[in-house]
Image (cartoon, rainbow, N blue to C red; front, side, top):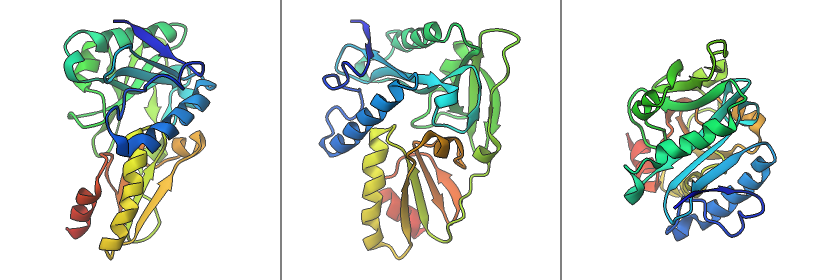
Length: 248
C-alpha cells in the first residue's frame, strides 16, 4: 500500500474516497471531481491511499482556499480523513507528513477543527499531538489550529466575517454549500424537497467562487445551515433532520 497523488491526468479514472458505495451521491462525486480539476490549477493537492477506502488528505495554499481565514504563506487542509479498517495504522500521520513536505517552504499548515469532537472536522487531539496549536476561535465551537514551521511565522486567524454567524434573508431555513464535499451537494438538493412538507421557507445557496467562500459568515463553507438568519450547524442534515429542526 502506498499514498498516491491524484491529478488532472488521473482524476477521471481514480476514486476520491467519498461516497464509494452511495449511488445517490454520484452527482456529488462528479461535481467534486470538476471542482478538484479547477482547484488543481490553484495549487490544490489531493493524496490518498491506493486502496478502496476513505484514507486521504486535501490541501491548498491559503490564498486560494475556500474558507474565511487570513493565513498568507500557509497551506490550508480542507479535509484529512482516515476511516474504517485503515484506522490505527499510522496513515493519518503519513498523510500529514505529505502535506508538510509540500509546505516546507511556507510558514506552516492550518486547519479548522472544534473545541469538542464534531462530525466533518478533524480531531483536535490528533492535531495537538502532531504539533499544532490553537491560533483563533469562532463561535459557537470552531477553532483554527496551525503548525508553524518557524517562530517568526505569522499567526493565522479567522476573518471577522467568519465570526458573525448570521445571514440577512428573512425568516426561513438557508443552507449554503460548495462542491468541495460530494455529500453536501446531494443533501443540499434533498433539502429543497422538504419545502413541500414544511410551511417554513427553505432556500439553498451554492457558493461557486473562492471569493464568496472567503466572505462567508461561518468558518465552514462546504455546508452550513442558518435558521431565521442565525447559524445552526455545519453538520450535514438529511430530510428527516431538517423537518425535525423546523418542527421545534
